[in-house]
Image (cartoon, rainbow, N blue to C red):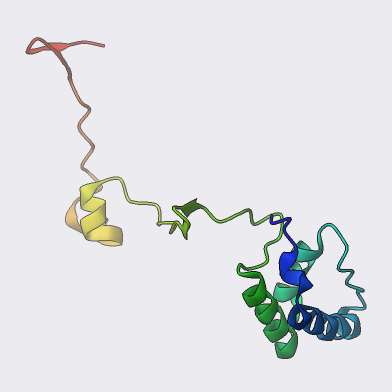
Length: 129
């Protein structure tokens, strides 16, 4: 979580926060305090909870002024490599046949195939383990 609050010191950010504070007070009866330690995580949670499009737009504007999206403590920081976010890939399938045929593996006789266990070799001869 960022502890640098320099983005809050602009007049545009303060005006946007005042507007957002009024809208959040009306919708959720929550008083946002800019001095709270977890102020940014509150904004991240409210971004997902609010039904008001104008509030979402104000939060998006604040994220633009800040330079990064607000995150709750549960989300964690995005993984970065050389300053860019690392994409999270899907779990890869283990077997080449499963990669090719996917869910239709049973139709192609893949259910009977058992993976070969590797044989340990020592100086050209199989060794029992």
